[in-house]
Image 1: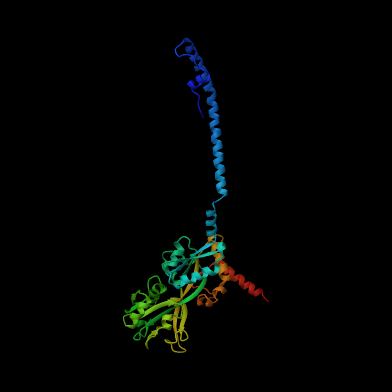
Image 2 (image 1 turned 60 degrees about the vertical axis):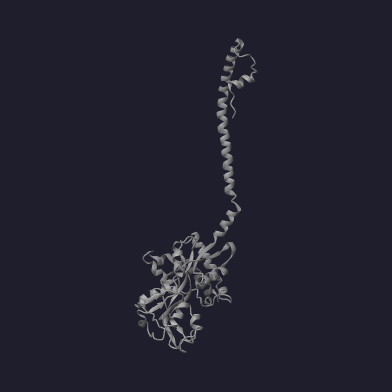
Length: 373
């Protein structure tokens, strides 16, 4: 908005009279009067024009904002598309069996934007539950069932906050001892290795020994090193918690007297563990033909947070259940871990409730089987 001053008005009127002359003085009076009249007329017009300009600018800005909302940038659309059906799976240490199983599941259920299972490397299988409870982006996890014991005090009602999708496989307890050790009681005060921290043996092993009432000198070094020290008599026993058979015992050459110590299943283990055996078909060089050694197994489970039915996170996990259960036969084919061949979708987990969508899937399959002639 440009304003007209008295001098400007004078020029517009063609004022050429000399300053100081009588005509000039009279002309100055006329000019001032006309200036005042013109300014009084223009001020209201300026006041009216300014709001109109502001309203027009505001309208253009609002229209531009609306267009931005209606037209998201291509990278924003891609971001939303990729995240809509991505399921995070805490899998454990890079060298562990759980992360390998997680990677195989991801291969089988992958369906582009419709489902993307994302395996996540963590500090170990025992840390996976912690990731599921507290780490953003983690929807599911592979855990050992006894990992719940650590959270009883930290997270009240932990068993109602975690549900299981699938009992993956049991991890059998192997207590392998030197010839002079003939029973668990002989290990009291002796050196026993539980593998490195973060492994199943390092977590579950000491807990099981505590329940057995066997107080040992615990070490946490890699099993390969511990087995060599065991041969030399520096360590009395090693504890493995993994699926049988274990290569170190199948392929290794051991002197007479090296053995697996029996652990009998009783009420001390009913909350998280299952009865199991080791036999001669699995370890022909260490167990006499036809003999069996009693032990216990730690269930390894695929679990999820107990998401509210109908929520976005629940729907993601429900879709994972549908894809995984429907394609389980692909995992049992050649090229995948042999453990998949022993998977029973209906197998239960002590102390946990099945994820609702998983139970509904099994119920539909049961009804369908009954309906067939």
